[in-house]
Image 1 (tube, rainbow, N blue to C red):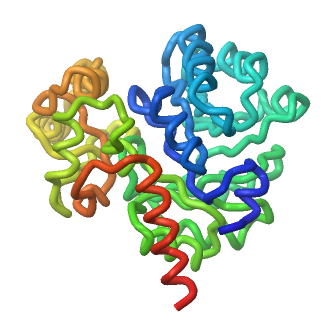
Image 2: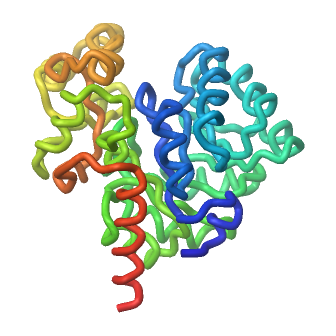
Amino acid sequence: MKTRITELLGIEYPVIQGGMAWVAEYHLAAAVSEAGGLGLIGAASAPPEIVREQIREAKKLTDKPIGVNVMLLNPNAEEVAKIVIEEGVKVVTTGAGNPGKYMEMWKNAGVKVIPVVASVAMAKLMERAGADAVVAEGMESGGHIGEATTMTLVPQVVDAVNIPVVAAGGIADGRGMAAAIMLGAEAVQMGTVFVTAKESIVHSNYKQKIIGAKDIDSEVTGRSTGHPVRSIRNKMTREYLRLEKEGASFEDLEHLTLGSLRNAVMDGDVVNGTVMAGQIAGLIKEEKSCKDIIEGITAQAERLLKG
């Protein structure tokens, strides 16, 4: 499956693993890259030196390309942006903001920049800023979301820009991948399915919560604050939505979720923790290796596309 994305990134399959906070660490990133996709280390709000260490550990496990997801709201974003260059990382995806101020520095160092966008306007802005591609992420995805669905967003972004488009949100099998390609995408980015990968260090409670999920089990919190987040329904989401309904302050809502993602991912607290996952969770039924996930999905997509 050769596309402009596989050529741009030097990967075998047009599959990118999402840069999920606490989840996208070096074991998972290296396994995805080794399997022929592009593994990402999620810098999130980690201290810069931890990100450096993660990159170095990943490189011990694979000599294939590895990327870093830089969350631009992170107070340490500038330092992480420089570490990417210092450590010879060749691909960066960005979230939560505009990477414009780092673009020249990255481009001069030969880094490919792929911002995640949730609108056509943002995709056009990123293309003008010099992005090599964009990830058009629909609101079916887990974690922080926009308003447009993948089905509506991807073709509109494809029509609006000349750079390659990666589809994300609600994709976990070859049918989703084939649909994304039919919409004009040249790769897919997947998160939820990789959370459950055998190489993922995520607590088994979290993985089982995804594997046991039904189609209606995800819920969006934070709409009232302008920062909507999709997670699997639990005691915490119910409490959050109750407080939102009662008009609780942003501070009170933030306090409720402080450290809750880490608690779910690392400690397995799936009752009071934040179990971020996309709407596609109901389709995921078992733990598989990254190799089996990627090869199975692309083989199914190829069969469907050949008709």
